Picture (cartoon, helix red, strand yellow):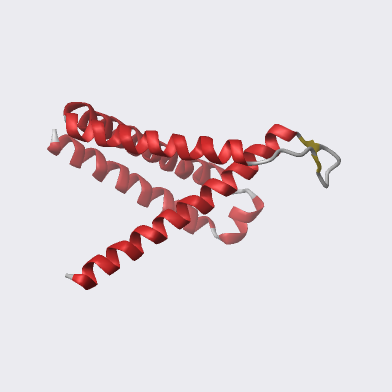
Length: 143
């Protein structure tokens, strides 16, 4: 399996180098004007394919590792649960006010509440991360 994966990675790498050479040989002006669209599009499809495969493998192997290890599953569920509780606290503490936008549309009250909740959640996570780093630093200095 490892040999097959190495061969596939080598082929994708070589294909990427070929597409990059095609883009470079077309020149900057041709790319800007759109005359090198075929090579740029081909390169982008390879990049999207590699990105999709990478994400699929990461998700698959992460879920496999979590589901096969009960302790890791419990830890993950606790962390996700704590995040959801914090997100709900932030959502219900945010106020939603209908707001007119510059393009003439308006942001609904629920949309405004989601934006406020996202900001509150961001601030709360920053404070938690800062407190944990401070606690860790103080703990190391004590030892």
